Image 1 (cartoon, protein in one colour):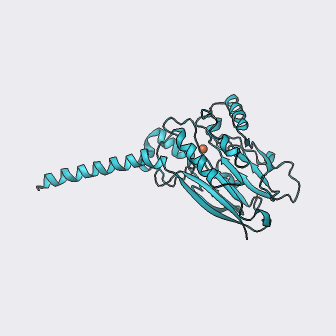
Image 2 (tube, protein in one colour):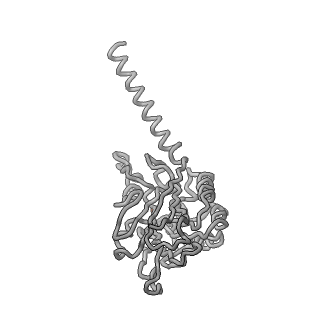
Image 3 (cartoon, rainbow, N blue to C red):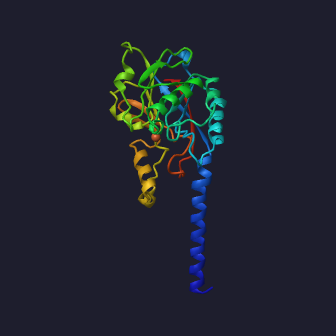
Length: 282
Ligand SMILES: [Fe+2]
């Protein structure tokens, strides 16, 4: 084969590789789902709660154009199959603030107590739409925690879950969320959409901080970030804590990669995730 012929073959190979990679990032990876099983050691956990499971999902982005409800339904079914004692949803439940999912989340409430906080997308349509969203979620059995606390609902575990509203849109009020908690009351977790809230809580207040928002993106989009809408998305989801476990301010922080997609309809090395945390006495 001539040198010209070899060059042409290499270019075709490169084009094919690029097309396959783009196809995987756009069409395959966002529609896969991995159930991540993690143990969480809690020193003071009562024996009755040893082995209890907390399911964490986030960033469903219900209403995202390219993302069908079937994917979210599969995530809901994965949660139910894990037989959790508590389900937590860490925000960005909708894409741009309006619910279009019908009774998509109602099956969760038939399984366990379900608590949620709102994310930046849940505020994008304005306060009236956010109120309507909270009403819709409440009707499906989802308790939305807007800077407040409630008992975690796990049998034998009288600890509280504290939920803060979204940080990116300026709705987080940790002081309001903990107001009224009696001294020496045990806390199980702080639920927040944005993980960086962990850098702003008093040390050792929360054994667990659970978050989403980042879509697990260690990947910074590289040169793709020069495309304005992709670059904007990359800046919004940037975090010191992109995915997995961290020690932050004396708390154990877990950041889930989430279920859905938002402005950038791609995932790269960041499979959609349902997290099952098993509480373990240490
Ligand atoms: Fe978000």
